[in-house]
Image (tube, rainbow, N blue to C red):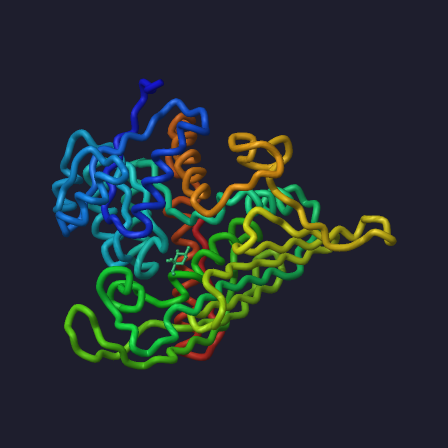
Length: 385
Ligand code: SOE
């Protein structure tokens, strides 16, 4: 049944993320009880044919080819930004000035300076804001967060995370334009640091607290690629691979690595946390499982447990899906993101974790990582409470 309270969404961008978010808006009320119902009011993009086909497929009511026009519309409550990173700040600031709520794709911005302006405007206007660090909403990851927060693991000693892919090894792959904007430094801001390690950092800071300092190395393996927008061979400005050491404020040590040159790995996001009493590990290719080792188990049967995180009675979000033993996947993390946003609206609590401010804290670490790799020195990192 249609709900009285509507959240009219205008989405900008219709690529991969446009699809994940659309699916989130469409599914959420089928599975979760919320006062608000998202309405897929308008989709915005520059190519009218592609936009029309996207809007028809996902049920967006209308289309706009100019994002400024979308922001001016009185029938839009929330702007969802799914554009390349270099557009995030301009759109978010204009949307906030027009009084719209904002859901922004990750990373928040091209750099922390831009991110600070974005946080300032959404906070000064008191507008609900969220950044789509979707892996927080995977039930096994949320469970890991709960276990650490409850203190079950005792003091945390180590946090390590990887995000490995292999899709840019081919030197003939061009940079720039649709999908490949991730390889163009002017559109993306950075390479794996902002695109992949930012996910690892968001989860790490959420679970294990602020990062105080880092020392990093980066590499660009393919130095020049054809640029799709100019047709000429141009220098590659992004980091293809990045590895760094970190010190967390709670005294634990961090080890992070990401690359798009790990042949055989498509989206292998993994993390492991080692505490005084127990350890947790998780990987995206098996996202419905959480591995847990508890030193308090009886010695004869002590070992790594492989927990199938699908029991609605025990596990976050799962009570709203199927019956125990039947798992959910990647797309559901976006349904959960929409759910968290709608619940926060009900509670009258504007910023929705991960908020712009949370994402700015991730951005501070990304900037420090890139600066450390450039200078070969440890870098201290600010944290905004
Ligand atoms: C890059 O290939 C990418 O699509 C990222 O942009 C996403 O944020 C990540 O979740 C999967 O990989």
